[in-house]
Image 1 (cartoon, rainbow, N blue to C red):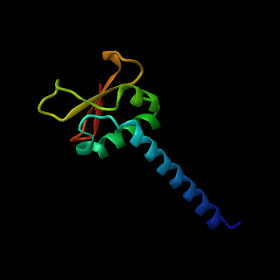
Image 2: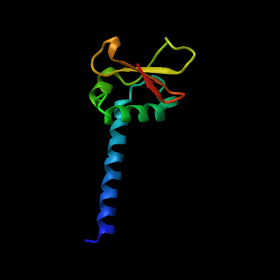
Image 3: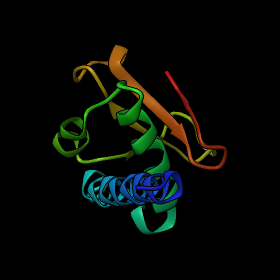
Length: 102
């Protein structure tokens, strides 16, 4: 097999795996507050948090996805628990900037 064909197969496999991961992420955030308004920001943040090992897909599903926070009004900030349901494990997402913080 030529190197170009082998690289094409490798690239196609990575793209399929990425698409499957993205489809899974849709299920992780399915019960998030204001989902239709912030779907893209929620997907990007959830995928990054799972890929870097900060959160698991099960944590998103168990906690219902991203929840609107009233603590940062008027900023559009949502939170999620990763590592247990305590304030110390709460991660915040500012959907206007994509910033995730504690």
